[in-house]
Length: 187
Image 1 (cartoon, one colour):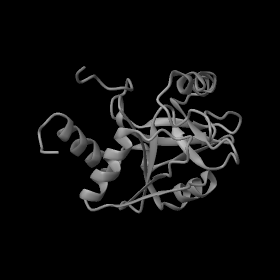
Image 2: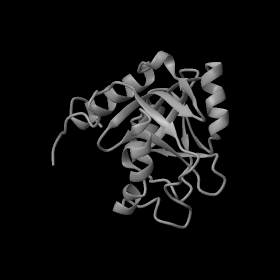
Image 3: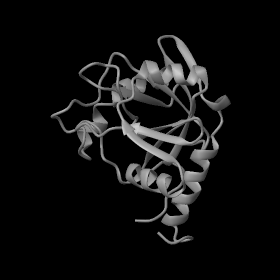
């Protein structure tokens, strides 16, 4: 065990994410909330198709209605509203309750951000990007720690977040979280 290099080849550079309306990764009552190989295997076909279209990751929607955001690739996902509110999907039984997700929520509160866990409709989120109320998006997970999202592709259209650059909230969370991980600041 020990520190690893960047999870994505570009390091902290924003990733592009394809929103699939054809595939679902997990369903309530299944094993989506468990750290199992099957959760990753279920993402391989859609992930390959996303890469062929020029995207790095896939945004997974719920299996029941196909409109509520769950995870991005093998990571939890967070949205920043107006530069001050961090929102992540509620744990529904099909979303992994990751330790990095928990760390981001606790650290976000400690840093003075408003933090919420709630259902996030994909169409409302995309409208928030267009209106500018969604100012940042990032994935969070063990290997990637914090991975900013620069654009979403959905229904033949791209939605760019924050000019395609990492935002101040994700930069701050990455710094603060890795400082704790490396023992540079007290936990």
